[in-house]
Length: 97
Image (tube, rainbow, N blue to C red; front, side, top):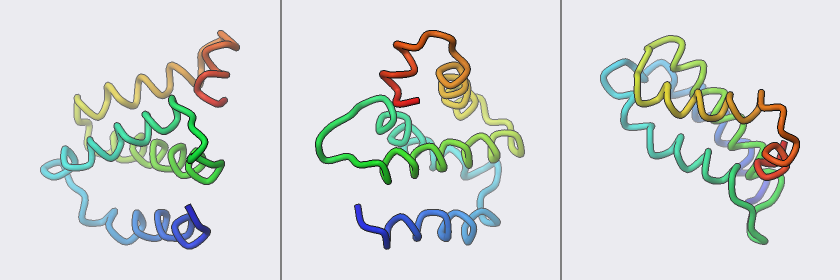
């Protein structure tokens, strides 16, 4: 991942956020799932930018969820917030928090 990609995700989300609505939010579910997977797994090909972008994207997911209330997206949001609010240090270490 280069710095160009790091700049593009937030810009793209801001640009397309007005087009997201309750009818097409389901199309983002695979992207949100990949962001969760990126946080949960660690490999030599992933860097800090990948983790930061994943966290940013999941926080964007939470913002969208509060706006449109989709049950499937809500499950992913709950999983993420359970991990970041969990008291088990080992679980946080696994997830990179």
